[in-house]
Length: 79
Image 1 (tube, rainbow, N blue to C red):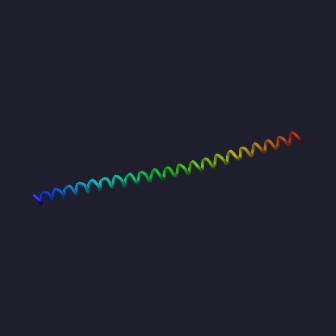
Image 2 (cartoon, rainbow, N blue to C red):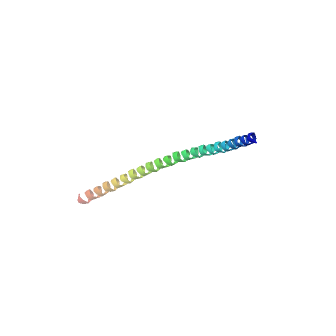
């Protein structure tokens, strides 16, 4: 009876260990997915920052051109 009980306990330990191993593998796969999404998010954030910087640069150029045109027109009128 004792030997059967010990054998059953060993079998239960093996089953639970197998379940733990399966869950560890699942967690490891999810970590990889999270890391990939984190990289993608970082890349997209940098792209957004770069696009915003480029937009601001273009807007500044447009404003400078408008000011130059205004000054040129003002000079032409006063001449």
